[in-house]
Image (cartoon, rainbow, N blue to C red; front, side, top):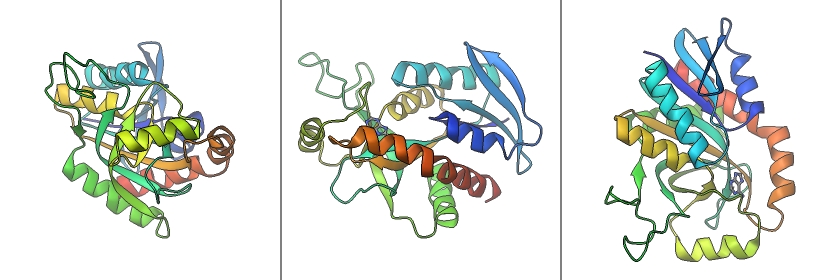
Length: 231
Ligand code: ADE
């Protein structure tokens, strides 16, 4: 069964495809999936698309149509906790949706009918991912912990501070991971995720994000994916 490599951005996917000698394109759910080999491993590479619903559809198609046995997600995120700076790497041990709020019927952040607000990543796959990050980017500062997802690009200092106060454990914020984690939990498919910090989710986030994506993000992700599949 193939491993899914899910990229958040075109630049990252292109860098992964550059390492695949034999990829062929298959369309499902209006998305292009790239099936082939990377370091001899059977893989399906795809763009997550942006936002929780789009990412959930991508994950569902990977599991239902391509029968992937695990999902590895790479992308960028805004740093939230103090000390999580641009260029750092965050490996998720769990995800929550910072914009989930069915209160007062359910506690704030709890996903209705799951009895939980946090969805853990797979421990064994995440340990492999942490090792791969260490191999691929030996001088990077690496954090491991909670990542928050929501359908918002967090780009004001005021919003970032409010999130930090409400959720002090959150290391970084992005727009897809919690959705993929929830789908993977539904299907019992192991999931691991790594995010390079592109901005601090503050008033400067927009400019920092665009520059980082062009300069660094895709090289980071491709190096991590390579080390992950080689290891
Ligand atoms: N991905 C990268 N930076 C982000 C931010 N500031 N907010 C949401 N998603 C992001």
